[in-house]
Image (cartoon, rainbow, N blue to C red; front, side, top):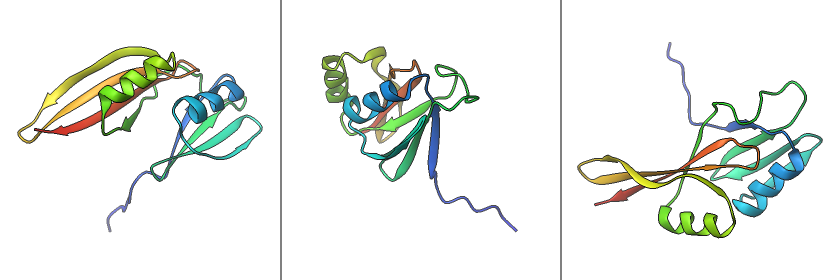
Length: 124
């Protein structure tokens, strides 16, 4: 018998302040808010739920959990996030040059100091 995993359904990120984190993901990153409750908020990110968790006992925000978001135009996202005063941890750069595409990556910090990657796979 084989384990069958069919994709990622939900990813959780810790937050210190759920109001501040909700504002960041909804208003700054433009992710649709699905539902919110005390100390939690759920967003849709291309069919994967992003669970922002500020419940007591949750992992400390700003730790080592990394989330990579897919984008079609990393330079446009970089400019837009700069306009929105998002902390740019590392500007867009090529991390891999493959036969048919270049893989671009940039790093930002969310309102809770979690590190978020934005990636673009650009065809050559």
